[in-house]
Length: 418
Ligand code: NIG
Ligand code: FE
Image (cartoon, rainbow, N blue to C red; front, side):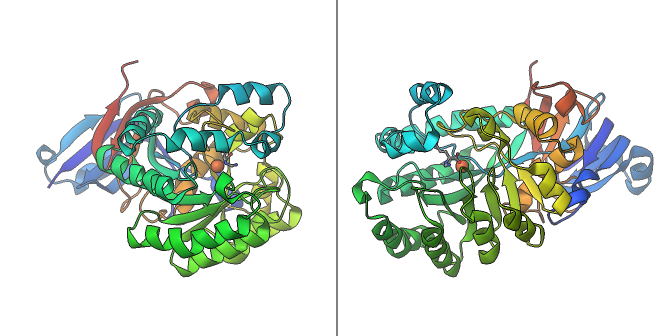
């Protein structure tokens, strides 16, 4: 039996629980000085002062000992909303947006997501897998141990299925756990222009059953937005997906307040994401539901939009997750340090709430709070060793990567050279 003992940690900081934390609960972490962690077969079995753990351990010789002197230990980050599988880049469009052209205007003129669709359709599965693995390496270096990965840059059935197979290929060959989401409803494919209801129909009757049959995705998502998919279309698609056993996610109220958050709650979605323009009613409904409100401040920053009302949602009692939304268009950055900086310095939530949002609540946004997202007995040993002795350095040492080592399922999978 593989047993590891991590000792001498300057600090251990973690949210506690097997469900999402709501509102003010997000501000309380368990913080231990000089802590130790016992890992057996990839699972955490104890977290405590070493002096206390010692009595429970018969023979330390049975353990591989890891010294965490000078390090704060925190749970691996769960990036619960990304579009990491894509071909090509869009620097030209970035500059158009910097100079004032709205995101939806570019999309409606055949650019934006449609541009990436063309570049992705041109790639082979092997090429797309290789590109994705490189991106995952960059995420791992920043402490991400679980990533949600959406399709949505194929739109046609073959390329959508290929994107989902790329997720599966990466899951097999990379330490990061990838969780697949089908986002065929990311844009209206050129082949279905002015026939978006027919496209919804095709997704329901052809694509979703095929994905289900091959176990290629766990969640179904939709970009519910003016001139993309309406609330009614989102409802039709998601209701069908739910009846087939998919978990639900929604790109909700990103640019206009259409009622995406309300729909997410009504359908029992695991998360409603973006929420820059969420309504008062949407906030109230989220606060009373199990739907996690996933905020993506890196995107608001890159689109030069006002941030989602994080503080207000927290005060109302919502469960907030934070994720990068890494994609080649609205947010070409997977930066975790930027995410912390924006959450705390711009959106006004505490470092404790930000850490909870990127660990335990991110896990809840993927139906995995029972397995990951905190450092406590029973959870998977996905553990970050920070270069610094205190979790607040995640914000205080602004925009600098704090990750020194990454443990995944009890094994060290990354070590920084810096
Ligand atoms: O979450 N809003 C829709 N989808 C992505 C952007 C995708 C893109 O621009 O390529 C988002 O921001
Ligand atoms: Fe997104």
